Length: 351
Ligand SMILES: Cc1ncc(C[n+]2csc(CCOP(=O)(O)OP(=O)(O)O)c2C)c(N)n1
Ligand code: SF4
Ligand SMILES: [Mg+2]
Image (cartoon, rainbow, N blue to C red; front, side, top):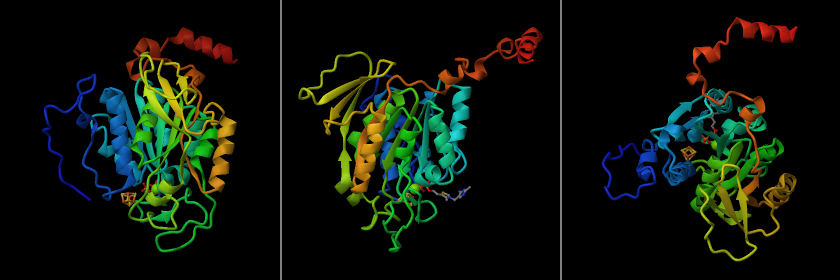
């Protein structure tokens, strides 16, 4: 743990993005997590993705629940909006904020305890409603903050630090997200920044419910042999189906790939994703095939990573509810209170 304050001054020649911000401008407070915790690498990946996308920090709202993972929004995007909610309740707070103001980019940060146990219902409903958000679960298979109890994502047969075997079946949040209609579903590993950063960037660019399950080892309580969420286990069993490049704007794709190995997915905001296929037969558009593929590999103890499913034509909760485009706090009295004639008309239509 470190509590040393970050120096305010930084080198004048640090690289800047199109807004003139350095990577430091997207950082937060110094992390108080255990040195080596996977969660800190995810914070670094979020910082990198927002820097690369040239996002104005004030356009981002980061929300979380309770846990070591849910503490991390303090350690990135210090100039963004933030709300640290109650254990398992991030999704409903995020949904409410999103409905009130659709102009912000919503980052929901949660843990496997926060989303797969107490918050499972909240997770499920925010996904099925198609809330426009990036929902990241920092998945270490344990309740890190309360000292390492098995969480609901711990694999059956895996062992705790003290050698106790987990006898319960695991919940796979990726499988649930696919079943409930998430329109961007990915899995990654905190130790694989080159995979994680473009996945986060693509999820931010996606309109609709984007879910990323990031295996993020807890070095204090779940990084031993017998764990299926340790650095060694994930490195040995990581089976990436593709690699992603995010191309913003309409620039031609100049990356040099062997013919047939790249699939370009165009989203309706013009963002294009260049998918370098590792598994030639894997089709990111096929939700049902993705579910079967995942189950088959999980049965063999393999962890499938990469962009697992995308629906580039997705809509979101606002489209479905046909809500007003203007954030509610910018509507004037005339728009909020259309008068008694309009009220009479509504009442008459209900009689
Ligand atoms: C309503 C409620 N119940 C229980 C707790 C105790 N508690 C705090 S964090 C936590 C689990 C955190 O696990 P996870 O979400 O996986 O985060 P991690 O610390 O592993 O990153 C629990 C059970 C709480 N804070 N509030
Ligand atoms: S207890 Fe585990 S999850 Fe929490 S900060 Fe330490 S290593 Fe990370
Ligand atoms: Mg956890």
